[in-house]
Image (cartoon, rainbow, N blue to C red; front, top):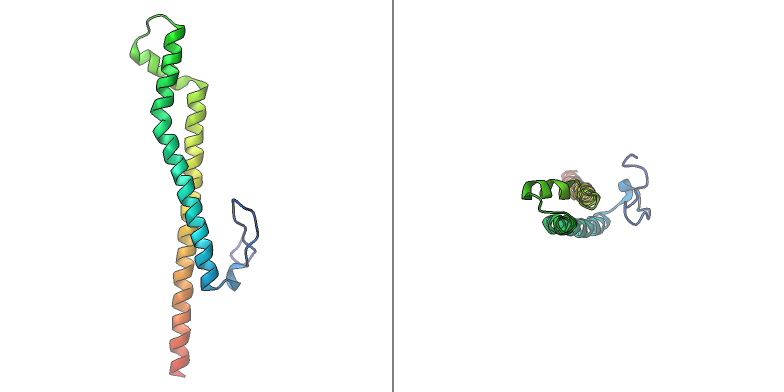
Length: 130
């Protein structure tokens, strides 16, 4: 999808004005919205990351209850191979990827805003010199 096509927000899937027609205020509103989505996704990724050791410990406790005395290193390996733990890791990876996508979109709109502002300033100066 090129910049000239209608852009869609990846979360709400509602079309936004074509980028070439967007004014500075629209770009600010869009980058603010994406920035807030970025913060929420980042919060979720960090929450999952913090829960990682707790989930592993919970799995280790569950394994320990169902087995005889198991060495700590083996217990940790068994917990890290558990499907629940693997699912958590996949969620963490997915959340990080979404966070990075939103960060890139946010920074792109921020750069677009700066470029548009510079172009407007340049056109104003150009008109004054004529």
